[in-house]
Amino acid sequence: DYDGFVVLQGTDTMAWTASALSFMLDNLGKPVIVTGSMIPMAKGYSDARRNLLISVFIAGTSSIPEVCIFFHDKLLRGNRSKKISTEALDAFYSPNHAPLATVGVSIQYHEALHRMPPRKPFKTRLDMDPGIIAVRLIPGFDDQLFHILKSVPSLKAVIVEMYGTGNAP
Image: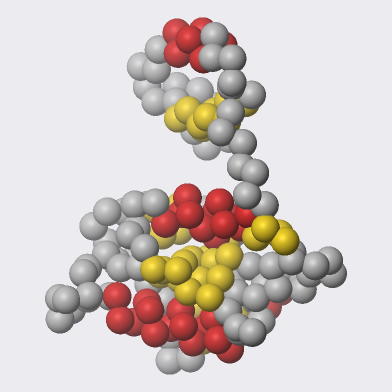
């Protein structure tokens, strides 16, 4: 029996991993903290040690029943997080959800934002649908791509990422 889990990985796909795990681990009753670092652990000034130690502490002592990202003193909801910088230590952000906890001299848990413990038994969902694609619209986007996508027989859905409130370039 485990109190929680910590997943270490590189930052480029961390938000994707946390989001995918949040949908794969149904009725999760324990914290799963995904973390990493911007600076390799071998460097004396690395952020890896702090991120790892605090992640282990939160996973082992909190009762937050969901997948989170811990990075640069913030605990973020995993499926609401995104990487916003490849240079700064404060590389992750949740644009539509405040942090679940912040770390300073102590850990401040923002409990009003935490999910309720599950009422159903835990189960894993391994049946992720490969027929879904995400397309980010950028200025100069060629809409011919949508015509090409329509001809893909296994495609079931297209997630279109737009600006702000849904404005297309």
